[in-house]
Image 1 (spheres, rainbow, N blue to C red):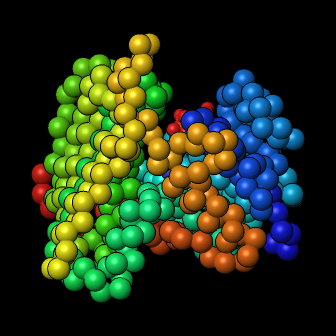
Image 2 (tube, rainbow, N blue to C red; image 1 turned 180 degrees about the horizontal axis):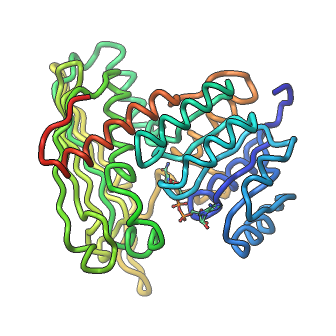
Length: 341
Ligand SMILES: NC(=O)c1ccc[n+]([C@@H]2O[C@H](COP(=O)([O-])OP(=O)(O)OC[C@H]3O[C@@H](n4cnc5c(N)ncnc54)[C@H](O)[C@@H]3O)[C@@H](O)[C@H]2O)c1
């Protein structure tokens, strides 16, 4: 790349895309030079707020800009394939929001394109940057925990997420892609082992009745190649009255240790006369004006790797391996039988 400041283009400036813009504009070694979003009002207002010189409604115009070194693709889960392939063809490095795609076929197209173009690629499994996961990984690699036996990971949302936050596209994704991709990545990365066999089940009905044709809950039992097993739960119909949007808990059992990670209870409880009781998000939200937390750390890793000429992680192969596992959960639940990978 040759320059010391990474010039980013951000494709899709919804909730998560704006968070990318904010962070890459703030970091010392990156700046956002262009944004693209099909929603003209939205893209103009984000460009104005963060003082971005170029705003487009067609991402191809962003990809045509020579000055753009790399792009973040922050579009709805089912729309990653076309911009992923186009960005690689335009020789831009790619930061792809999770999940890679919602089908293995689409995921393979993206991976093939980035490998062919020899551009660098990172999938944003940002949960890897939780300090709790770093601690568990360091202890495991130092041999202090023993061998993996079992993992339980729950990543749930309130019904606000599929019916309001992702109202326009929740029916186009599935919980294994939207949420379980994070938890499967965490376990796969921690153990350094791939998925061998998947048994998935799902529950449909509640969201469908509300007009959102997507299952309410998935559960998966997964055997890993290292012989350990893991249980994954994702539900997105929890009541909105809960004091949090995301319920995330994890239990890891090893031959010589157990590790419990709870990122819901942040150590801060808040009750006001105007709002409901809440646990304010401390792990990803910044209250200082300086981006902080696991998403900021993941994006900073990408910027650092780009300017220092290093290969970022998680890689395209990680992204595809997780997509194969999450797609197998969906398929197993549909067929009612286990899937071998
Ligand atoms: N890593 C994480 O922790 C994390 C957290 C949240 C979301 N995500 C991922 O980020 C992605 C975006 O999620 P979100 O919550 O920001 O969604 P969102 O609905 O808030 O934003 C999506 C944006 O894409 C735009 N868009 C749709 N089609 C387009 C097109 N063809 N061209 C240009 N723009 C288009 C929409 O107008 C919208 O502004 C998803 O893949 C999601 O899974 C990751």
